[in-house]
Length: 263
Image (cartoon, rainbow, N blue to C red; front, side, top):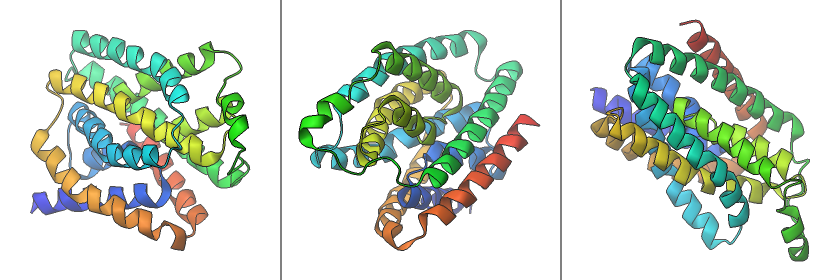
């Protein structure tokens, strides 16, 4: 019975990700902790690899469409990947199943969910203020940050947050890229964010696996549901009122965040 429940959970999260682009980690980790009673370190580790595999397909299709700005992905990854490895080392020294470490994980996860809720609602308010198209000759200028260190610095913050909580590579990453590259069209910002999430969640997820924080059978069940869910969500996206879904999601994420902080 539990197997079908996990597959359905994967399908539901995949459907929402396909509909809204909100990161699966924002939804899957709280579901695993609250609905299924999975230990926080196992929920986070499993969800990181879940995110890596679900976003690989999206990255391939975006790369084929030639809208991934690899320079931006490289700049942010230069900060996020080393930060993820350092965070994994600290987790390994402390022990991921240690009660104190679990408390840090759940509290940080709660704060990350509140940030994601705010970021999701911000996108509802902003609408399409960011341009949707840009002249090819202006792309080079639009993908250059005000200072080379800013993407690396923000990348390090995202890398640490994602490794501890599995949350942050989605909605928070998009808001950060919107601030760093204000002239870049929204589709390119989303594409860079998704492409960056793949190596980050893969490195963090494999690191958690080396610590014993990944439930492999659970991962397979979640993926079995999520992949068709994402496909369906992407096809329904144009027929669904985006602002309504994002507003409901931000309220749901804020509730989960407050609940995690108060554990």
